Image 1 (spheres, rainbow, N blue to C red):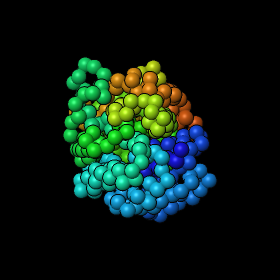
Image 2: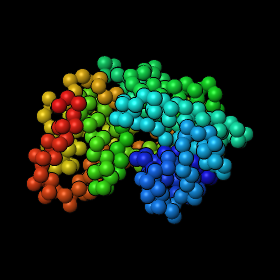
Image 3: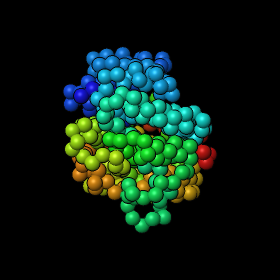
Length: 328
């Protein structure tokens, strides 16, 4: 099957490429044209069949990418923290781009399965609830990113057919030392995690498993279409944690102490994650394959070579981190 992946050179996208390649699917990538994406494209020369550089806001660019596609996994989006600062760009790319993609799919006159990635943050602040967050719970607009994803979901319900929506919990990448340093600026998000909050994460590899399986099952009519699911790592794999435990183990894997609590939010609802009901999603897509312990051990192994310099420059590193906090 030829699978079109939009936004394929991001955190989740790279894992999706690897999973699709492992299952011997042909892969078409649709990405924005930039120096960074051109460099990344070279690394996938033997993995990806076709790479189309273009702008998701331009219908003709999307039509070019869709030419031979038999399924679409839509990942392209403006995400936090940039989405917080630029509402217009977020709406143009996230919502209008999705509308363009759906219209282009209709124009093909072919029944092409469409897998859309939303976010668990569209469920809004839920820490006051005494239950797992369920995919059928109400959606709540709390910011530009969440609004764009909710508008996309509403549009799909009205105008699309043969699709699935996956609301992703916090996705943790499989870091290399290089990718971690490139993602360093995104660590400011950690300071919005309250020590007592419930949170559930998931590894990018497990997200990729669910998305590729979803595309396959939609194509073969083996799963109910037009459904919404939440993807989280699962309780049995140790992913349902409290904020303090998650942060302690994450920083510990980097041989760093957690910054003082005063640099973290005092609002337990600042970061819209929780514990999720993923039972139905797991039954359908069998994706919860990695434990939180596995992730931490991988991080420790990856960064073990830096243990000595991290110890030597620990104070400087923590000071730099603290200055990234919105509560500094």
